[in-house]
Amino acid sequence: MKIALIAHDQKKDEMVNFTIAYEHIFQKHELFATGTTGQRIMGETELSITRLQSGPLGGDQQIGAMIAENGLDLILFFRDPLTAQPHEPDVTALLRLCDVYGIPLATNIATAEILLQSLESGLMSWRDLVHKYK
Image (cartoon, rainbow, N blue to C red; front, side):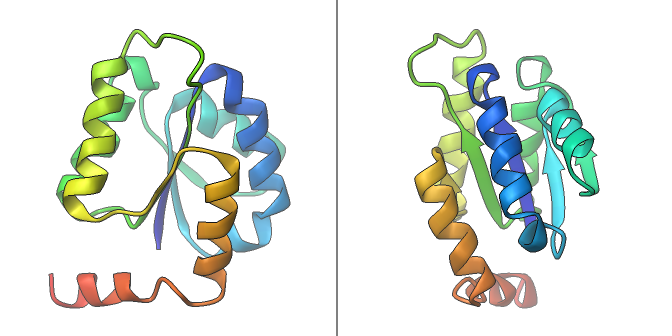
C-alpha cells in the first residue's frame, strides 16, 4: 500500500514516535511524506520515504494530486487543530479529496493506530481491488 505521512509542526514529534512504534508495519509499504515530516522520520527510523515539498510550499497539493490519480491508499495526517495554518485552504482541499476518492484518513494518533492495525491484519485489502480494476 501507498501511505502518506503528514504532520503539522506541533505534531511532528508525535508522528515520529508513532512511526518508530510501528516501523515493522511501515517498512512493508511505500511511504510518502511532506518535507520536514519525512526528513524527521527518516532521521529516527530505517524507513525509506519519498519526500515531497513542505505542506505550505505545495506538499499538501502534491499529496492531493496523488489522491486524484489513485496513487495513495492511506493518509495519516496529524493535524494541530489549535494553531491557525497559513495553508489551511490546501489542508481543507486535501481532506475533501480523501472523501471524494474514498481514501482512509486519520487526523489523530488514535485513528491512525486503528487504521494501521487494520492494515496489518488484512482488513484493508479492498484497496487492492481498486488498483486491480483501475
